[in-house]
Length: 440
Ligand SMILES: *Cc1c(COP(=O)(O)O)cnc(C)c1O
Image (cartoon, rainbow, N blue to C red; front, side):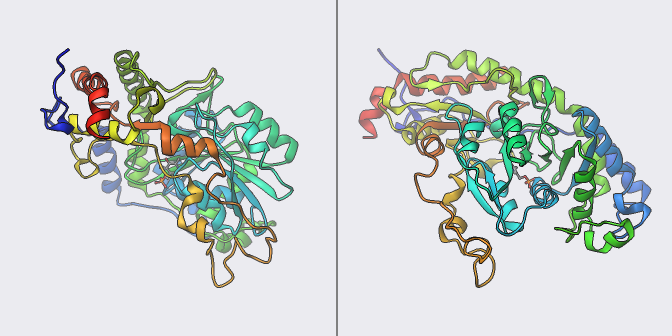
């Protein structure tokens, strides 16, 4: 059989012309931004007990629109998902000596949110097929100190929330959904974000919809909404005027979103469904071209969950192909071009996602705050947090051995572009024997 030579071994690549950029905004966003500029009011927040404590017209309209879309009572906009997670952990009343259970397979802010309130992040393993924590893995980590859980709908798939909420009711835990990668996701037909007690979304420029930087917290709970609004906007300066009785964690930040971002966000929200549908179509097409490659499994979508594909996570089994994952990725990258405007990131395909979070230096070294290293070695926390390698075997196996992630299915990729992606996989797979020998 004659197969064309792999680019990684000196042959011609499948494609050299760059892939199109992901551009999800247009004239509507420009008009929205100009509307705000013309008004002369770029923000109307006042950090005091005042009619403008809740911000300007665009911020409020954006919050209402998102809350309505997600069937939530309240939307509280913030300037990032990170600040939204901080506000949510604070609103839950988490403090020194408490534990917050969190997924190790997430962006680092999911875990630092606990640290900000001097609480200890406790990592629960993920399911090997959905990459989400489950009620079982969370349950194994519950102690009398557990106060809250941050569930991450990772890669865009909604976690199995029903058993998680039942567990929360049994143990009186606050559930925070990190929805950064799953806007418009659903679980058993219901929008995620207000299934838990609070849900946090990201609007940074990598995400499905964005405002440059930004975020949104949803909740159905009036009391939590008030606390979130306080933490967002200088709680300490507002508490007397608002008659706030419980001052726990009422130390405010400035997490306020600007009016321009809020105006752009309203337009982005209108486009979200269409953008996500394009992702679903692209994934379906790509998967139809990739099925049958030995040792490569397409992501499992659990019954009841939706998947909105922030990334497309493939499961690779080197035991079947006989070729190390890193070798296959190197070969795939050599066949494919970079994506315009993200040239510095190389070809948008890679091994794993982020290292299990407990392996970050902040957890390995447990230095934390000040000379006493709170919360890790705080007088309020008599235990030794466990962050050793081996703590979450499914997460470590997924990250270090199995997962291949890519973003080559975003809106803007044409059928011809997706055909090139598929052709690269087929070319590499046709040459697996050769690759195993040459790269050994
Ligand atoms: C992007 C992301 C964040 C952080 O979002 P920012 O808006 O950049 O703060 C947090 N968690 C997850 C899972 C993310 O993907």
